[in-house]
Structures are given as structure tokens and as C-alpha cells.
Length: 208
Image (cartoon, rainbow, N blue to C red; front, side, top):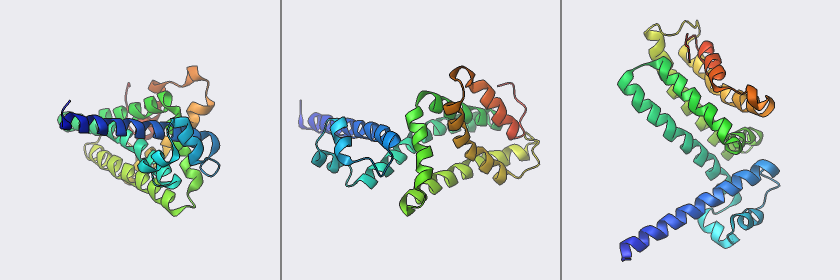
């Protein structure tokens, strides 16, 4: 193995360890809350020493914020793929259905990550946490508003509401979907029904 390969392998190992720490941190923050969780127990669960963990994350707050960003980035990668498809087919209804489907699958298959974003609401009094949450919500609204404005211009939505208000309503249903997953019987949590509900809220008529 030459020096380039060794450097690449070392970097990949660093990335794997960092992701392991994030996965453990998300689970512990969810179960105990931010204030009651400690970096010592997170490091122990992740199988690393605290000094090693601090090489990846300088503080507990930095670790918590990185957990938030990692979840956002995971969703954004999928949304970006959908947007690239939208640029080709130009169908706003299909775009919104696919975005909803991605999020519903995320809530269904990764409840620890979707619930983590709900917990973030509890820490809005901290300006750093509030800013991260606000940035995520605002950027989501801006992207959805753009699509809905195009749909309205084409007559694809019959909603009397303006695109911005519709986008705000849509994005805030992210939290409702997590609540549905938590309190509904698993057999009743159906993606097709949620997509139809969200599409109806937006004034679309769909057979999703």
C-alpha cells in the first residue's frame, strides 16, 4: 500500500469513526436529552476514548449540532436527487409527491433520526440550537415555495393560499408526520395515505 492509499484509508477510517460517534450520540441524546447526556457515556458507547472523540467534536454542543447537520444533509442529498429529476420532467405534483415519500420513508425507517429533530424543538432557548433549526426550516420553505409558485402559475394547484403560506404549512407537517408515526398503530402508518393527505393540503389532485 503506497502513501496515497494509506492516506485515503486513514481518512475513510476517520470518517467511519465519526459516523459511529454520531449514530451513538443521536440515540443517547434521544433517550436522555441533551442536558442529561454526557460525552463520557457517548464515547464509551461508541467504543472510543473521550480524547479521541474530542478530536472529532470539540464539545458536547458541537457534537449535538453536528448530529442535526448530518440528518439535514442526509435528507438534502435525497431531495437534490429528486430536484435533478424535476428539472427534466418539470412536474411539480410529482416532485412534491416524491419529496413527501422520501420524508415518510425516513420517518418510518429511521425513527431515531426523525425524532431527534423533534427534540431540537425543546432547546430553542439556546441561540445556537434555535439558529440551526430556523435555518433548516427556512431553507426548506424557500425550496418548497419555489416549486409551489411554479405549480400555481401552471394551474396545477387549486389552493386559494399563496405559495409561501402553503410552503410553511407543508414544511411544518414534518413534525406532524413524526407524531403520527409515534402514536399510530404501525399497520395504519401508510405512505400512500400520507402522500394523498399532503397533496390534498397543497390543492393537488393525485392518485399517488
